[in-house]
Structures are given as structure tokens and as C-alpha cells.
Image (cartoon, rainbow, N blue to C red):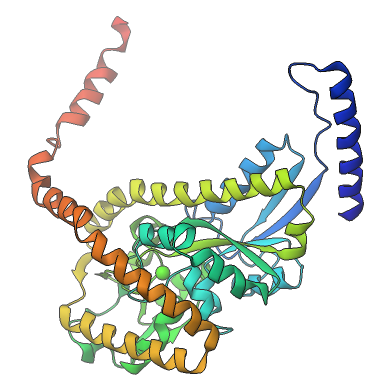
Length: 387
Ligand code: CA
């Protein structure tokens, strides 16, 4: 890399001299160096949404550098186990990884702030905290200890509570429940008797099918339908209060980042912004129809009761105090983050919440009659010969 960079700088210098002599309207660029990176994703290829975030980044980076900077994307487990990608980036086994940082809460729960922590922020609030609320500075300081620089690069929006073989009606129903659940939510749920399991996305279905676990959460209707959970568990609870707006990150090895030309750094950073916007848009566009298909397949859509939510909330708040007491890094981020959360909720309950709630109430009056669209399509199909 160093040699490549030196050669790039040399070429760039020559290019500049030639430009000064001929002064063309569009300067001939010497082009950047060839850089080939490997990216380890934590997700299976079958999920175009969440795995697709890494592909969005790779495509943009290649297109914007004329194919000079390539990032080869590997699915979870292909070259690095899904839950070890942070270590692979730290040790420079790969240059970068695309992941949900809360997977690494066992290493340090502070990782989860650049993803989601229970009863935390929604997707918009997460972006606001990260880009303009001090989150980026706090988390980059934390990631330095792991030779990692992180970039927000995807968000699922608020997730579903997951798939349960038996309906959860009361707090007592949680006792003894073996549940696949991502991130820090496992800690407070243990207080309520849940036995949390960390299982990568691609391995959840067989565990739920065999009955090794009683319940599993993944993301939301579109992804969950693809993974087939509705075939083995009928109760689909919501919301996933542990993931109000989970961020996916691109983890980049600090030395690999430092060795990139400034132009490539800017391109990679912009590609991550793109992946962040695009993934959320994709989920919001694809989830409504997927949810309808699931319900048509006999899925029972059930909200968590207020009793269950309140008990979980209490357990979560206790857990935060316990972690903050022992972990100074967590406490530093948490103290700043919780002020932001309170302010963000105060603001969102004014215009945003009133607007959303009114529109939800008015939605029935906005519905397009179900027959209108197919009838139009059928008419167009029946009469193409006239054109
Ligand atoms: Ca999840």
C-alpha cells in the first residue's frame, strides 16, 4: 500500500505539471492507485436489504474511482465468522467489515451505541445523534482502542419483536423462554427469566424449526419472510423495543484507512452515507407488502402488552445503571447519549408525532380501492395491439 501510495503521489505530481503547461479545460487525470480491499459481512447473501448495504458501498466506490478502488464483499462465514468480524478488522485480516456492532456487546457493551440499545433511539434520532449530536466523536474515540474507524452504513428502522411459538400475554410467559435475540437486550431479559441466544441470521431457522429455541427475532417482515420463520412460529409480536433504529456500520481498519488517498477516503465516506439512506428506504418500501403476505399466510400479529413493555423497560434501565457502574467507557457515552435521547423525544412528540398520528387516523380515507390498480393493469394488457 505504501509503495502504491508513493507511486500515486509521484504520478499526481507529474500530472499537475503537465496540466499547468497545457491548461486544458478538463485536465487529464493520472488516476488513483489500484486498491483492492476485502469486506467481511455479518449477514447472509440471501438478504438483499441488510447484506445489500455492503454491495451498495462496493458498487459506488468502484464506479466513482473508475474501478481503481475495489471492495470484494464476502457473506457472513465465508471468510470470517459473522460474530468475529470486529476482530478481523482489528487484526487487519480484512480491511473492513459490514456489521451490527451490538453483536460485540460481550467484548464491551459500548459497541452497541453505534447500533442500538434497548429503548433507545429511532432511525432518525440515531442519525441525528451520530452525525450532529456528538455520537460520531464519542464512538470514534471508543473504536480507536480496536484500530477501527466506523461509518454509519445502513439502518433497518424499528424492528419487529419476533417470532414466538406461544403467544406472550404476561411477563410470566417470558420465564424459561429460549430466545434468539440480537445485542444487549439479552441482559435485561435474563432478569425476566428469558434465556437469550446469540445466533447468526443464517442459522436461526433450523434452531427454531428443531425447537432448540422457542422464539427468535431478526429484523422485520421483508427479511423475516425470506428466512421463513412464519412456517415454524405463528405469533409475530411487536415492536422490537430493543431496536428502535439499529444502525449498521462499516468498520474500517485504521491503518488501511490512513493509507487511502484523500479522494478515496471521501468516496468511501460518501458511499457509506448512501448505504445508510438507501437501506432504510428499501425496508420502508418493502415491509408493508411483506407484512400483508405474512398475515395472509396465517401469521398472528400481536403487540406486546403494556405490562410486558413496562417490565422490560424497568429491567433495561436497571441494566444500564449496572453496566455504567462497572464500565467507564460505557458511562461516558451513555451520559451524553441519554441527554440527547430525552431532547430528541421531546422534539419528536411535537410536530412529527402529531403529524404521524393524524395521518394514521386518516389513512382509511386515503385508501385506493383494491380493484382499481389490477383493473387498470388488466385493461392495458388486453389492449396493446391497438398501439
Ligand atoms: Ca433484530
